[in-house]
Image (cartoon, rainbow, N blue to C red; front, side, top):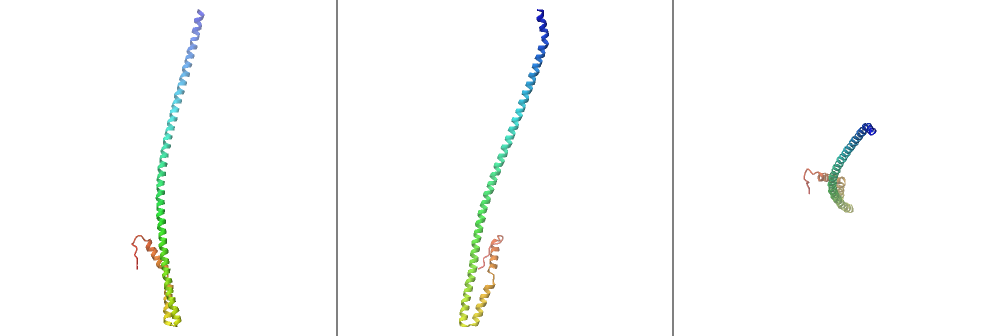
Length: 164
């Protein structure tokens, strides 16, 4: 029995040492597990923060997209109005020019008829009068009046004055 006691006392420090090492390993493992859990929690929190930030950015982009779509619609409507205004102005100017040159043509045609009759009758006074009439029509610039008309038409600051 003495031998048994001796072994027991000799192995007691070894057992204590083994227990201490086991506790040290256990504490180290527990610290590592806690550290990993904390790191995982921080990573998860970071992912949540980034996801929320990304969601906020997506909402901002969507709202900005809606604003831009509205601006595009406004611009398209303004474009249509402006195109209609330009087309109407073109038609009006075309009619004024055709009317102006049509009146000149009629006036010249009438003076040339008078000139033909005056030449047939050899009437010098009528020839001179017809040539003066033709000359007065030819020297006037019909586009000068047209330019004034266009300026008056485009000037929105004062009312359009029609002079008949």
